[in-house]
Length: 149
Image 1 (cartoon, one colour):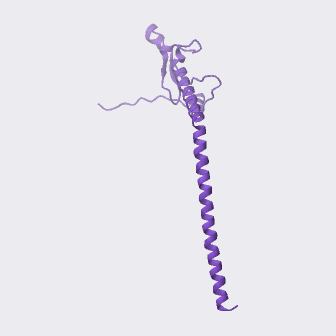
Image 2 (image 1 turned 90 degrees about the vertical axis):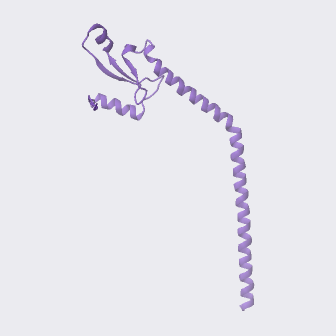
Image 3 (image 1 turned 120 degrees about the vertical axis):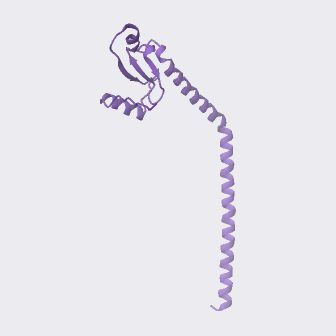
């Protein structure tokens, strides 16, 4: 091959490469635009269902919180409502079982019970399970903290 043929082949190769990359870029833009339009269409079509699901989840969580706070007033709650203190997290209640009788009647027995309220088939979270295990294994203690005047 002589020099003019090599130059022509090189120019043809470079032009082919430039044209191919321009076509590839254009195809990429078209694919991206189609994907963007599909996403926008999906968002519009699904917005109602997403909102409805969000409202249902929020409603369910609210009902759960109301149930937790109303639990001492229900007949299924095995402790005196006056002995129960709602803390909400990481457990729902600390019950000072017998404390009201100590104050009112002069009794001298109190036991401390951590209570988690679940509705239906609710299961303990990992943190709740670890707290339950700590109590069952006796890893519970008392600490008095004295603050300076």
